[in-house]
Length: 276
Image 1 (cartoon, rainbow, N blue to C red):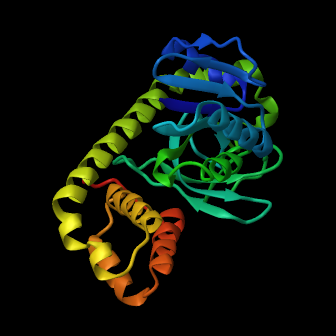
Image 2: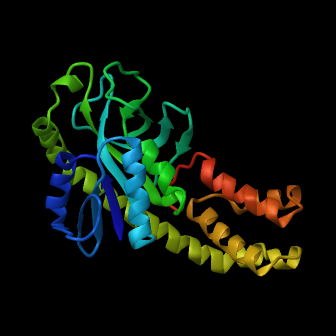
């Protein structure tokens, strides 16, 4: 299942129409649509609303193969309708930064800065939205970083200001880019499945013989379970097993080793453009 979270109904409408999603008449506190492959929820604007809806979706339905925030961004000179994939997300208020893996061979990657109100003065160095930081911060509490992605559509720039952007105009912009956005979502999903499958093969054929933690040091059953999951994720993002070999020499404590691996997977910039 792929979960898509969108702030505004005018941003969501073209996506749900293309995906042929049906409205779910249940107790959800947000507008919510679904079919057998996708769920789409309209969260309302702002990082808080996005974080609350993301957490609710996980609480209601559990894990998903992919979590994607789709929405609009502003930039100083980027072309209206351009689609970008966030590789770095910043919270303007707190200064916190998250790196999101790039699974496609794409030059359209971006730093997205989440602000509290609509931006009218732009930097050349980043795009501006109001939801990505809340989305990634919430999603990281219950799923792996490689399953969290933010895809944005440029809706305003220095020439076409946000003051002139009403729901009708935003709907037109998203409609023109919706097929590209959904194509990107599917490509990310397929790439992730391929990498997970490939990593499982490598995990079974190579890594178990290269590093058997239980033969090197005393390991509890809980640590063994955590080790196997972190090792699988390490391979899924395409990192070298040699780094773990080096860390084994540095981190004499099994807990410290596992904490180091988890911290690397959570914070280290990742590019998955090359084929596994």
